[in-house]
Image (cartoon, rainbow, N blue to C red):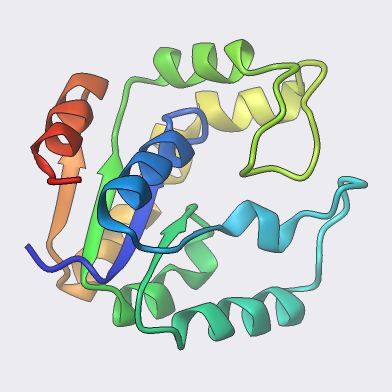
Length: 164
């Protein structure tokens, strides 16, 4: 399996960043969090143009792991990647994970989540119905092979199979 340019996608709370960090540790690939490109520490966001420019600079590199969905830019990332990992976990697991990380400093976000965001939790609750079909269609059109993990145990087994 060739892994030089990798996408890690999935519902918020699925553990994309945790998986991506473990993958980066095992492969030596540089890891970039799309949330860190898009969000500012004051919880505002950059413009699409600024985001696209920063993403373009990363995509021009020879080796990387990109953690995040951002369906608007998924086609351009798929055109450049050689491996896609999709963490396709149950909704309740994702919701619980987001609840459980509250108050923790994380390398994938420029702020600490201190309270529940009802809008974000609703987005997660509806992800399978609202966002997943769009992502599936984009993936299908790309023709890229996608490795799908349906449980954390499957993802952990894959990571364990990689040489360090």
